[in-house]
View 1 (cartoon, helix red, strand yellow):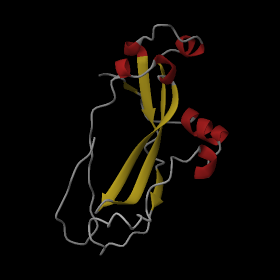
View 2 (cartoon, rainbow, N blue to C red; view 1 turned 90 degrees about the vertical axis):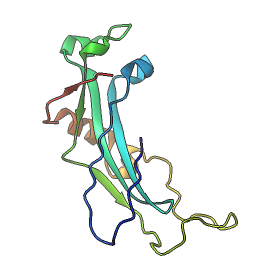
View 3 (cartoon, helix red, strand yellow; view 1 turned 180 degrees about the vertical axis):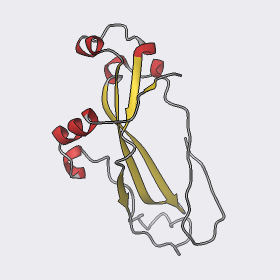
Length: 144
């Protein structure tokens, strides 16, 4: 999903972005469970200036189902826990005065890199799993 805002005066803003959760029926069963991320990217004149990531853990509401996941998946028993208190924020320096479009011959110096792996984010896979296991928020049902 995406939103467009503006025109806006130079200042600090709080933007609330709300979207429906993904439809679990459209997600391959081997990708339904485990740790994933929600990424929000902010762009100004086609240049990314901020990326905010949240760790998400998708699991069943019962330990026995997590230990031995059923096939086919029981979508009504899946829960999502978002580690909202600990976002991973990356800021990019951009030229705020640059025109909206670059000529085709000029590369955009702020093309976002491929998604970092946990170690590239300064968090090992083990630390990421520990953070997910220590999540405090109440899980929300995965509805579509």
